[in-house]
Length: 318
Length: 307
Image (cartoon, each protein chain N blue to C red):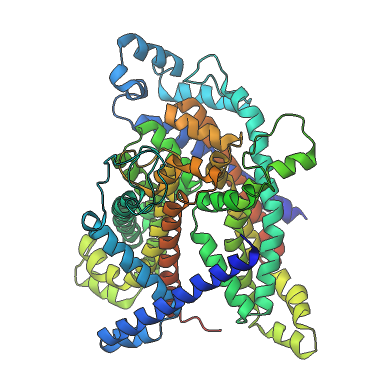
């Protein structure tokens, strides 16, 4: 038990260190510009007064580390400063509700995608080289190759036009859960279709990889049914690679929401970052990028911990 | 459309594709000689279909001005004209010919994606092989830097950089190439690490070779096979990333004909049940599927994976 706590603690510390490096990178990227950001944003319309105003707001008259420290300590307390495009609005207020919406959409898609992918992967491994296996594999390879907006518009055309599901995923505050699930079904389904393929292929590969080991042959010889061999004997040892690929795809979901939110006009963080990029509102982009990156790092950390726990040998590195 | 007709159409498309792929393979086998012929004979139909599609796209991209009935940016008719004999696929939101823009899009979208992938590969491979050959502190420093860069989701990182540098085709190419070069670096370094411990590399070092000569003359030729397969995969990612950014209005800017932005500009038609805006998206999807099919075959061959 102590070893596990130490291991989790070490991974957490490493994750925090990574996050710190990422925050320096996200905040410091503006330093890459020749000249400074105020001139670059204003471009042709730069007058000495407007440049000075933006400089003051971004604190560009102060050294980098002072600005970075002010930004980081504010961010840790949930305060990301004021929006650059609209100085009356706080970035934290713009993010607030949208963050919850994005988490809801990603969670909804994950709840559909993970069981589907694991089920299909196990079945494909069970009936490998059958028509089912080949069909699912070719389908998965095709689905991986589709851009998200293609999948989204095909679904709109097919399910949305027939009136079964709304094509605009606007969610008014205070609607019931069932209503909310129904309204956001199409964006969630789009995300599900996009991430399922990769998870399913990896699940199948991880299980098939194990089927050649002697202990599986032993289980077969003693008369365990094919399904039993896979679920009782192969699956527990395949948890590590499967947990990894699930985490990678959850992390992918977080960035995948950007395009899907724009297609379905869903009020989430993805739409906010896209709007802010075209307005060059660096304060909002930095805040959202930091949130996405933190989620990404946390998910990878979780996968790391799960795969170490699933394999006791990894707890005792030589 | 009923489910039965939908299934019939899908079956027809699959059968048609398989037949075209079979014919294409027969033609390739007849035209080639030696080892190439033997490997082509064993190619699965999916890979042949992929090669056929890639060849078609290249043909369209190169011959675009000859094939397109109208100019890329010319406004030739009313807005959102329906399909007709004059305008095969109707017109877009400004009255430009949809079919012509689709054809020019092959040149612009695929060309920019190819250039970006090539740039990412040059930077990523050079740095990766360099790190593996030199080792030590250089390898450590480069690898830690890449680790941090890769801990940020690529689309988000690209969005951050586009905010700072603004949106133009040049910044788009540089930004995506920079983001993808980190992924190429990882692969190139991993491949090269298996190679630099070989005896012939040591012999080359003892001969006095070093630096660029060692990297490009000794290591690179032996790392080429996995890197070529990675190039195909990486092209798919870059192509999808550029299309997604263009779709979001942050990539290739109008009036250049580009598949991603064409979908966005004409998306309103979809709500009226018109499939025209899906054609550029489908063109993106088809090319990515084709490249993936070919890469899958090559990876399968290279790994000798047999169950």
